[in-house]
Image 1 (cartoon, helix red, strand yellow):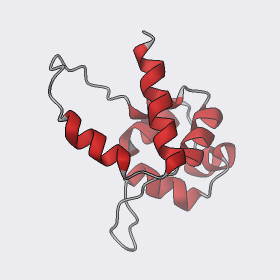
Image 2 (tube, rainbow, N blue to C red; image 1 turned 120 degrees about the vertical axis):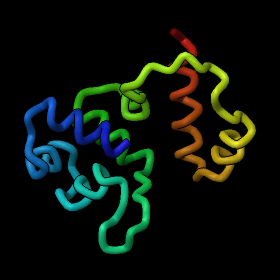
Image 3 (tube, rainbow, N blue to C red; image 1 turned 60 degrees about the vertical axis):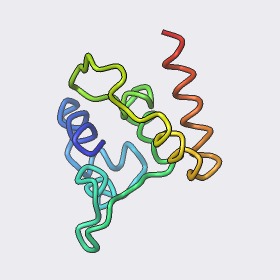
Length: 109
């Protein structure tokens, strides 16, 4: 997701600080999101559903676009559904609800 965030910001010709102000987050947090990890700890950054919604609103894009890859894949069955379901079950309830909402929206197409 970090590369996607950086690409969106670059396409909008925004500096890190300008984008952070629009999104309502600190520029250091946005930098970590774009990198995908916290440089001080080396641990991955996992934004909450609320942060993802803030980004969606600030960048004026559908939240599901943050999860889309720029690469088209023809392999429809290239994922492990059981592993995905297990990971979803471990999410906080509000994050789980966001995932369900995203899946519902994607299924409308």
